[in-house]
Structures are given as C-alpha cells and as structure tokens.
Image (cartoon, rainbow over all chains, first blue to last red; front, side):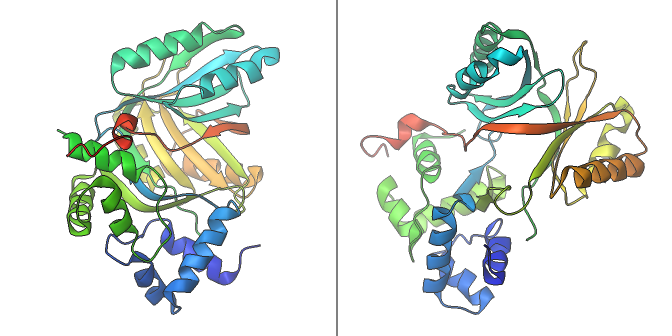
Length: 149
Length: 164
C-alpha cells in the first residue's frame, strides 16, 4: 500500500530528479523530511515493484536511433511463441498483446533503417504470423508518462 | 554527433541509478570523469533534448492504473497538428503520435490512454473524440504485457576500459 508520503514522493520523482550533487537531499527539502528518509523510501518502492526504473531517460531519435511501432496478426495458438521470439530482440522495448485483428504490438529501436528492415522481416517470417504492419512516426506530439497519484 | 565519451556516458546512465547521497559522483567514477563534468554534460543533454528527463517510471498497474488502451484514429491530414495539440492536453494521454497508415490499416493517429478502469478509458476516448471533432476511432486494450524495458543504448560502451 502506498502512503500519502509515497504518493507525494512519486509525484515529484517521476519527472524531477535534480541534476546536482545531492539530488535526494533536494527532493527531501521539497517534502520537509530528511535525505535518509527519501533514500530509504525510494529503495523500498523500487524493491517492491512500484518504481520500474529511476534514472536518465533519453530521446532515442535525438541519439540517432530509428524506431517504429509494429503489429502482427498471429494465430492464437502461436501467440506465446511469437511474443517470446519478439522479446528476444534487444531493440524491442515494449511488447503488448492486444485485443483486435492485430494482436501483438511492439516498439522497435535500431541503430539504422537496415537493421529495422531485417528485424521486421525476420519477425514477419515467424511461424504463426499472418501479417505484419510497421507504423513509423511522422510526428510526435507528446511523450509524457506521469501518473498523478 | 555523439563521440565516444557521449556514448559511454549514455550507456552507463542507462544502467542502475545509485540510490545514495551522491549518485552522480559514483556514476562519474564509473565513466572516468569528474562529478562536475558529468553534471555539466547532463545539463547540456537536457538543453538539447537528448535527455528527455531525469526521473522515474512507475509500474502503472501497481499504482492503480490498471487499464491502458492504444486508441487509434483516422484524422484528415490537414487536421493532424491541431488534433495533436488538442489531445496532448489531456492528462490521461501519455503518448500522442501521427504515424504512417497502411493500405489494410487506415489509422494514422495514435494515443496511449492510461486510466483506472476500462470504462474510464472509454470515457476518455469519447472526450477526446468530442474535443477533436472526430468519429473514426477504435480502442485496442492490452491483455498482456510481454515486455517493458528501457533501451540499452550503445551497450558496447558500458563494458571494458575507459574509452575517453
């Protein structure tokens, strides 16, 4: 269970981990507690699976990576095998089974377009995959994953 | 252009962030530069947009947002920018992109919606449709999360000797 303090802490830490020598002391100031409390609480939240990841979040396109959102139509008996095969690619960061005609959706990051093409061709060729669509972004309007607790 | 030091910094910053009083000092040590240099470089990445944020991502289901839906839309091309602007203002919309449609898949506009329940997702989609004056959309609820990780950028730079 998340305490009120946990929620306040998580609301700050999602987007505002300071870039300074003692960032957690700064966060503690905002919350009127001491640094040790913030550190202890963050460790607890991380160990108990509330925080997936804490740290630096880079913009892949700004780093020169090529990305796409792709989806496959998979026959139901092959879903697990296909999902696991897709997972094996390090450039696949998100992989979700969804309702609808195209039932597995994944994001793929690669260092260049050739690698993307080769990877998608390999996935399209997996047993059980009927078809694959690739939906590269034309424009990004928002990427802001922040939950108001 | 990113040089070897940039790649090493980015690779190591993608690893575990130390939950200690002076985390940047520890990371700088791993990289082979001073804490001050690291702080300056990270601020530079932030100004340039390469560093999107220093912060945290939560496990959305653990914090109560059990429902997530990819809501896909058909938006006339001349209205894409305006639609992006309108839908981005909704807090429940975490991602908003225009994408290339395909012959067998006409949807060219994509919003990720996170909410507490499926019904809430549906209501939010209705609100988005009203706000943007659109009718052609469909909600694709997720039924299973197979993978959700951060990218390992330049992984070869995180290993081995200092490459400065």
